[in-house]
Structure formats: C-alpha cells, structure tokens
Length: 212
Figure (cartoon, one colour):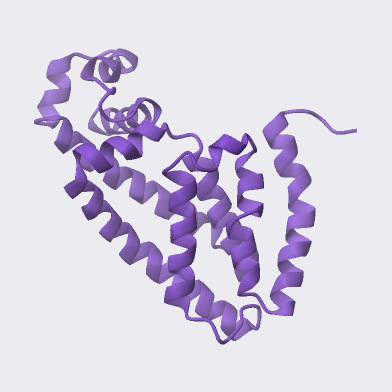
C-alpha cells in the first residue's frame, strides 16, 4: 500500500502542483482513508521528500534503459527529448511551489540529481570524444552546465510554452542545436541522419494521425 500511495502522490503532485495536492485528492483514487496515509507519513513534507526521491529514481532508470546499444550522439538527443517531453506533462506549479515553499528539499534534490546525472552525462561526452563524434576541445563539465541551463528554462518556466509548439520542436530549436555545436563533422552527420529518420514517427505519435 505504501508504494501505491507514493506513486499516486507523485502523479497528483505533478498534475496539481504541491499546494493544490490535498490528502483528499490523494485518497480518492486509492479508495483509502486519511488514516492510512498518516500511518506511513507524518506530514505532507515527509511525503513530498519521498516523492522527489521516487521521481529521481524513475528518471535515472529511464536514462539507464535508453543507454543500451545506442551511439553517443543519438543517445544524448533521446535523453533530453525524453526529459523535455516529461517536463511538458508537469504542472508549472509543481516547480514553482517546490522552489517557494520547500527550498531546502529543492536544493537537496538538485544536489542528488546533479551529482549522479552530471557524472553520467560527462562520461557520455568523454566517450563521444574518444569515438570522434564530439570535439576534443570542449570541457564536458561546462558543456553539460550549458544544457542544464537550457533545460531548466524549458522545463521550469513558461518561456517556451508560449510559442505553442511541441516538445520535439522545442528540443530541435534549443538543446539539439547546442549538442550539434560540440559535434565533429562525423557527429553532426550521425545526429542529422537520426533526426531525419526519427521526426516522422514523433510527429505521428504527437498527432495520433496515420500518414498515408
């Protein structure tokens, strides 16, 4: 039951934001009592802390699942597409509430994510340099910091949502251009070939329409 409460709480926090997610909204889809929730969690902050850990673990697992057998350039593209697509399904209030009402939890979560994900991404860039698809004059730490800044602007603000385009188009016009910038000619060719073959399936998925 605890796992069900935690997953449902994650879904509800992301859907409504943190302040608007009440215990009532949590127990209704589960068909349980308030007492059952308080059996496992003393308060909303304790629940939120475990929810953030669950979200972090799920994100890391998704990245791990993508990593099997894919070349570095296309893998980096897919990782950030997945991240942006996921972010577009999150209520903007979630990040705003976390930043304003729970800054300590936000910082704790960012340190955990930054440490594990950051090292993984830097290793990917170093691997790409060895494979000749990324330029050898870039600094992996600085390159990844640039992507993080772009991603946070996309995922945690409404700066890009106002354009009314899909997450995929946002990716192509932001992070994909950034990745292209630290590719060698070989890496650029691999990236462009991948985008050319991937785009129709993504658009089909987004529109739900069959193409003849």
